[in-house]
Amino acid sequence: MRFRIGVISDTHGLVRPEVADVFAGVDAIVHAGDIGGEHVLDALHAIAPLTFVEGNVDDGSGEGIVRATIGGLRVLLTHVLPEAEKPAPRIVASLKKAPADVVIFGHSHQQFNDCVNGVWYFNPASAGPRRFHLPVSVGMIEKRGSAWRARHIALIETSR
Image (cartoon, rainbow, N blue to C red; front, side, top):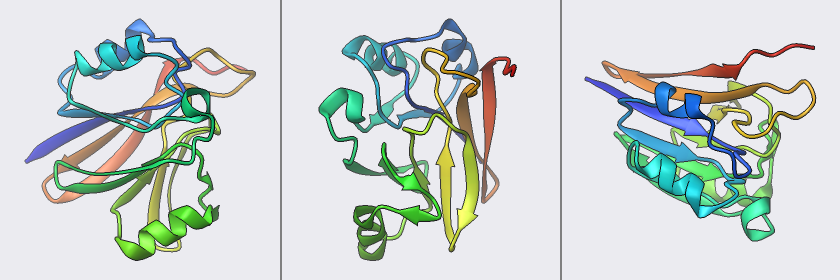
């Protein structure tokens, strides 16, 4: 069975037209914060069911945690991690209380997809206004058979 989750973060009020094309046909969308307005949520919800967490641009802290099971994948969603190698104590405590298959986060505007100390962390990078040389991308988490895999999809080419 195939299941696809579009992952987006740090839109900062911008809904790029490429997002609708990349997310066409996904089963669900996850937004990892710094949304920047209800219009962003409305646009994403028009594509697929949406789960989101507010970021520091949205609620002032970016430290909220949202838990969801999407397509059988247990997700811990937060905006500010800050680092997979040294997650915030609130993340560590939440994972001790109940494990997650993946921790999805944003804030850094940097792509991340790795397992650290037995926990899978994924950051799609930023899909909003371009900042410096950082990537503008979204993520796709896909289940094929019983295995989940994630990848980054560039929305605009990165140049340095």
